Image (cartoon, rainbow, N blue to C red):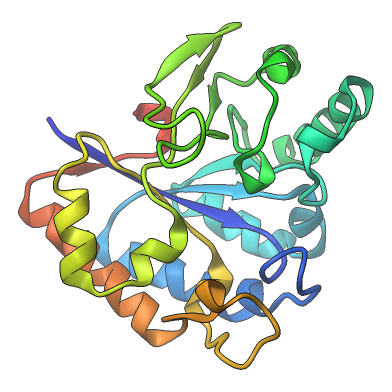
Length: 231
């Protein structure tokens, strides 16, 4: 059976440019409502900071049957941290997130995570790392297991999913097991925010409509929606 996984990076609005939480307050409820209506599971990679600030939102994610994953402590760049600091950040974030439910999947902010740090994930009980992408070096990364951790790449960048639906669906039809990733802030209108053009483009209701059409496209093609731990 063909599978597709929708993953959500739950963080501040478009870090590091903004320090606001509009996506958490307004975008995340829209996503949960959409997934509830379509009866599909997703994986939410959450920073521990968000879990501490908005615990009821994280409880909603878990209570509705979605997978909870780790996205670091404060959306830090792990490729800029030494091993000791990276280990401390992951251990602390894991302890916080595990209070909401078992966490076994990890994604580093900015999809940047040194392969030598995979041993840190192993030590903290992780089985999945999705900190790589097929569209970033080394290009066309294939799923593989390293240091006991299965590395599952993201298929397309989140901003691509906000392009015209016909273009998005055509490309994704060529991907065997798509792993999509989105952010809650993309589902509020960011057009007037002081961020890059590609981060502002197509945000708000049009992004939500695109995602809903993509979900129905995959359903029509008989894909099974699964959390990333089942990919």
